[in-house]
Image (spheres, rainbow, N blue to C red):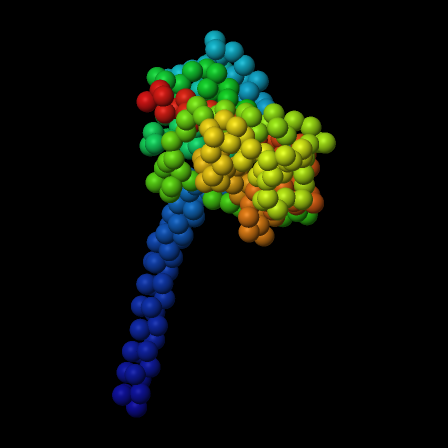
Length: 302
């Protein structure tokens, strides 16, 4: 009998010890979960879905920073209420607060601006892209305006991609940096090639939307691919397809086209996609020119 009672008391004591230990561990587990959640929320390369509100945030940030006198080029990522001057980061945060009611460090508009800086400030290895680009002595007020304009354009393109894909679009990772192969130097010739391609494809009547990558010398209508090939031939005398202009065009298609994952030959398949319009082709070439121009300027200023 005494042995039986001893065993019962031992089991009860063990259970009590287990319960006490479990209770004590709960705060630690909750803290760990919160830390993991915080780390996830602070992923510097996260690319949230965009909404019309994000487009309005980018536009509002441009309004906030609409003159050099309003630009604070000594950013510390603190945005006090009542400020009269604004850094790039604070213009986006103030715009976000005005339109959404709260600041969002990893909001879609701010993230898209960071990815624009990844592209145009190649190899600068900023720790805080928005702050460090804003404070970079080589950055001008026009550069800040260009970042905001490109951010607005990219958000508009992503919104169109989502709308044409039933409101669902796969989220791409941020644009590749130098460490992931986007280190091909840009030259003035590359800028002239894309400018010439835009001239070749300057009217809907000149657009061939049934590309086969066969580009005869006497053709009068041009696919996206053939316009780039013809432009390169005229400007540089070469017709190779592996130049930096085409690489940039493919990268933008990967970022913005709703059907990009189905494409095998991106320039051809984007050109032939029934959801793609002539203004889409023009916008793509415009973005290629803008990005390459900024990359060239960044390389020269280093």
